Length: 272
Ligand code: URA
Image (cartoon, rainbow, N blue to C red; front, side, top):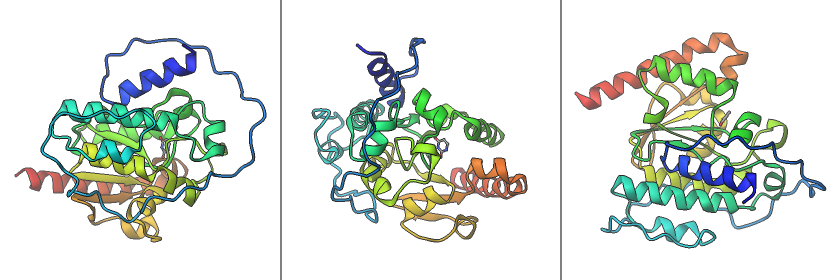
């Protein structure tokens, strides 16, 4: 088994909420020769405006696991009402992601896919933009400098990272950390919607313009979306600035803290 395969496998288990993993030191992957042209493979894009369907719910609590390459739709056409069912479905979906080559440029340049991490039963889901260099290397979202800042926000809000579910609009690193192309976001949408459908969070926080605009299918700047709850399916959605933006614009930190206080107040009244 290659180092890359082991890394992907450990990442899939972690993505599915299996946290007790051995620490494996692996050599850095060799650079890939002869990258292809900078095009994305054209496939029919999933309907980015569709809210997660509740009509697809069935009364089973066990999860049929289709072949890794089977359409995610088959996997998602079930109910995920136990932690076990959610863990198993996330694991299957992450295998499909690891095999995905819909965006050929990203698939050629990635070290590995970055599926998502956290509690499969999380009440709160975080959505970011796309993996950066650190995430691409480690296979986990938000582990670089933006992730360190996000961790501080998580702690200041009284949460632990493992209580949340964290993922991105894209599961592959765009070269040079450029913004995701619309076609790339559309190609990855099935996986994002799958994660939302499986975890079924009460709340989603979109970190930054890319996450907010893609999830909600709007063109409004994040500065105009923040400060109120929007909705996606049954989840309440709060949009705020991306931690990377805060690293460049110190003065925006107080706005994000206002957003977090607004969010915490909502949680408090929901729990009252
Ligand atoms: N920025 C993101 O949006 N996501 C990550 O995972 C890391 C940095």
